[in-house]
Length: 534
Image (cartoon, rainbow, N blue to C red):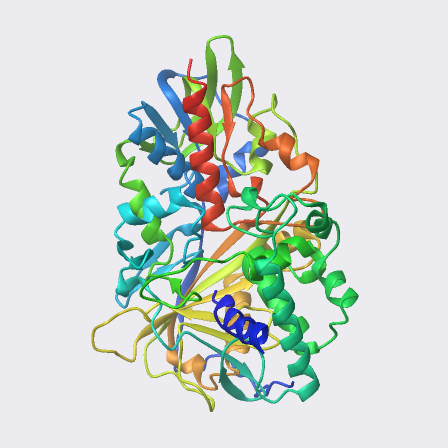
C-alpha cells in the first residue's frame, strides 16, 4: 500500500525548513445476500510435507537446471537462464506461478490477491530497470531519467485516511490531531529524511534497495538489534498518531507491528526508496488493476513452456553427478524423480527445512506473517462519510486492517458504480503460529463479519452495497524482519550455496518480502548458477 508518498513529500519539506465513529453495525438483512467463498493456495497439497507419505517414483526426468518454486524470485532466475540459453525446468506447487503476486478477475475488473504496487526503481538496481524496459513499463529516457508508461503510474487521487469522522488526504494523520502531535510527526519525517541521505564510512547509502547494497557501517547495523518501537521511544516519539502510522507502515511491508520489527527494517521502509522519473514525482508508484501479477506475467513470458504446476517437491539430495529432486505430480497422481546438474531453490526457508535435509536448518528467528485478503465487489454507489473522494489507497485510522485498494482505480474508460475493493488484513500478533491457526479457524461468515464491521465505520451502508466477498488466506504471507534477522549471521549461512549445486533464491533471504528483493535474489542465484556450471 502507498504510505511512502506523502511521507516523502513531508520529509522533503521538513528538510528544507482520535476517535473513530463506530456506528451501530447490522449484518446483511434477509433481503440482501452477499455471495462469496474462501479460496487460496493449495494448503492440502502443501501439508502433505508433514507426513511425507509418498510412493516410490514411477518416472524419471532430467534437466540442466531445475528451479524449485514459482514466485517472483524463481521467475527472475528463469529470465536470466533463458537469456543465457540454459536448459531448465520449473516446478511450482500451486495451480499457477506468481507466489504472493497472483491475481483474480471478475466481470468488473482484475484484482490482486497480494502484492499490488512497485515504487519507482532505485538507479542502483540496473537488472530491475532492464526488466522494466523489457516489460514496457519504462518506455524511454529524458534528461537522464527513465520515462514510465503513463497508464502504469498511479492516478490521482492516490490515498486518503479516515480519521475523526473525516476522510483526509494523505496517510500521515493531520485531521483533528493536536499541534504537539503534528510537530512530533514533522520531527520524525525530518529524521527519516536524514537517514535517507546518510552514507556510511564505506561510502554506501545507509539504506537502499537491494538491501545487500546498503552500508555495512556498524552504526547502522546496530539498529537491527533493537525494535522499531524501542527506537521511537529512545528518540522521544510518543504521539499516538505517529505510533499508529509507524505500526501501519510495518504491517504494510512486514505483517507485524513496530514491536516485532527491527529498527533497521523500520527505517529502511522510509529511507530506502530513491527512484526518480522524468514524467512523475519521486513518490509515485507503479500499479495495475491486477497488482504485481502484471509483472509476473511479463516474467512468465520467458519461461511459460518450462513451468510445471501442481508439483509438490518433497525431497532434494545432492549426488556426485548433480542433484536428485523428488516431487509429487498432483495432476497425474504420481511421484517423479528429477535429475539436475544444478538446482535453484526458490522456496521459503520453512519449506526448505523439510525438503532439503542436507541444507542449513533455520531457527525460529525466521517468522512468517499470516494475512487475510478479501476482494469485495460493490454493485452500487459506495456510501461515504465527509471528506476526500475515494482514492487508490483507502485506510481507516485505528483499524486492525490496512484498509483497501480500489482495484478499478487505473481504468481510463467511463466510470461505473461497480468496483472491486481489495481489502488487506494482516494478523500482526507476536506469535505467528497462533495467528496462523486463528486465521484458518475462522470461517467465511466470521471473516465477512470482521470486514463489514470494519468498513461500515467509513461506509455506513456498505453491507447493502456489496454483492460478493471472496477471501484468501495466506498462512505464510511474508517474512517478518524481527530484530537480528536481516544482518544476523544465520541468514548469511542459510543463503549460502551448497557444493556449487544448490543455489538459494527467495525474498526471505533479504529479510523483507518486496518485489525488488525477490527479483534481486532470483537473478543473483541464477548468475551464481551460471558462474559454477559443471
